[in-house]
Amino acid sequence: MKKAYRIKSNKDFQTVFKFGKSFANKQFVLYYLKKEDQAHFRIGLSVGKKLGNAVLRNKVKRLLRQAFLELEKDIKQDYDYVIIARIPARDLDFFQVKKSLLHLLKKRNLIVRDFIEG
Image (cartoon, rainbow, N blue to C red):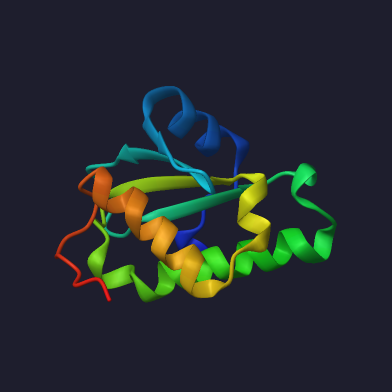
């Protein structure tokens, strides 16, 4: 994922937290904020130390980035997304991460097209 598509600054994170909406499941919390002047979505990832050591936290972040990359064409583009990983996320493989993320995005109508589950 291109670095231009990531949220890095604390100011940007705080803006999404303050003015955005949120939705959660057992593994992740999704914050999202519509940005009219933005051509492509941006994501910010937050994986706390309670999840485990640095190796495990980085693994969860890599899985999330890859899931977003595969869903790139199907996600509404003019949004900032912040994903907070919860403790159960450390036990997931890639397909479970993608499915959980897709569940959050579908529930908030942030997906452009419908997926056939299976």
